[in-house]
Amino acid sequence: MDPEQEAQMGRQWEAQMGREDALIAAMRRHLPVGERTLIGSGDDCASIAAPEQRFIVTTDAIVENEHFTLEWSSFHDVGRRAAAQNLADIAAQGGRASALVVALVMPPYVSDEQVVDLVTGFGQEVSCTRAGVVGGDVTAGSQLVVSVTALGYTPYGDVQRGNAQVGDVVAICGTLGFSYVGYQLLKTGQVPGTLRTSEVQPTLAPYVDTYRAPHPPYEAGVLAAQAGAHAMMDISDGLSTDAKRMADASAVTLAFVGTQLRGFSRQLKPGAEAAGVDPWECVLNGGEDHSLLACFPPESTLPDGFQVVGRVEESAEGGAVTLDGRPVAEAGWDHLSER
Ligand SMILES: Nc1ncnc2c1ncn2[C@@H]1O[C@H](COP(=O)(O)OP(=O)(O)OP(=O)(O)O)[C@@H](O)[C@H]1O
Ligand SMILES: Cc1ncc(C[n+]2csc(CCOP(=O)(O)O)c2C)c(N)n1
Ligand SMILES: [Mg+2]
Image 1 (cartoon, helix red, strand yellow):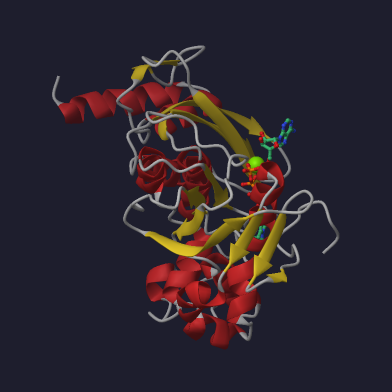
Image 2 (cartoon, rainbow, N blue to C red):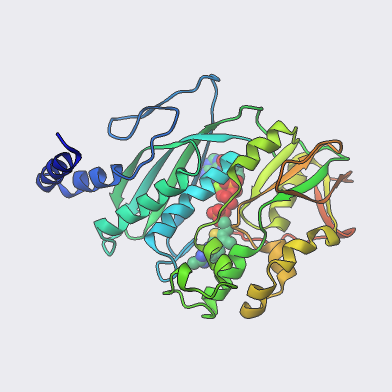
């Protein structure tokens, strides 16, 4: 049977199915197959090769009007974003993703085409890695929720957040504050939410693009592990908050150097000016770029893309974060505090 005949038979078959089965069939056409996929989407469970006899696993959900709004993001963006933030967690452990599953809660105002668009974006982002999308779930509900579980493996061992050592070099790979600046540009109306990213003026587009779907440096996580990183995490809630989590877990001080962070704030200048926010605030407290924060032994050769931003020092009690010797307040995003 030629591919066109096959596609036509598929469409006829879908026309006879219930809505849920037809929707799943439509989604399955957009799911990348990973190099470790043994059984993909379509059965009770998927099956994934794990030759190391261990795997890593993480889960993160995104919720409409909490992490995104359909007024500012397309369904495709929402899918890409859901994949990116889970793939970032895998990278932050020094891992490579092997498989992802995606559960969708679909409200009545979302069409089948829109949800297929979301899954297409999800699959597109996963295609930046060697992983497959091996299954999921669709259910009805009052708000759009995308809940993802990602599996992976750590070829050079797990890099935990609690193992930073005094004397280590602190480094970051990726941007800081781009997503927050994008969020502010949309919130203040400086960039209308209805504009597609390609229609936004070029000086502001990178911020809005990162807000809609971040672009974490996935392969840099494995390279950091290979280079001997002692500790690593992705920055989801903001540098001040996430660095404190690493400092607490490692019982050390993460001592940032202002001049070494200056490059990050310079990159924010056009967007921060347009949105009327302080670029330093965005560097320290803006989350959701999902860049990698890592601590390396002082003699390490840092992988491409990592920039030194400070040192690990002793801490009198618990963990601490400083900037040029002064304490940094934890002012990143907190879902459960009042806003
Ligand atoms: N409901 C839960 N039950 C058990 N463990 C949880 C629960 N929620 C979070 N955790 C665990 O707590 C730790 C921190 O979770 P958190 O979601 O803050 O981190 P993250 O996923 O790295 O960051 P973010 O969600 O901001 O991207 C993780 O190890 C996570 O598995
Ligand atoms: C519409 C809208 N309102 C507010 C925000 C800001 N925001 C939401 S969650 C989060 C931290 C990361 O979440 P998590 O810890 O769950 O990964 C941030 C900075 C947004 N992105 N969209
Ligand atoms: Mg989480």
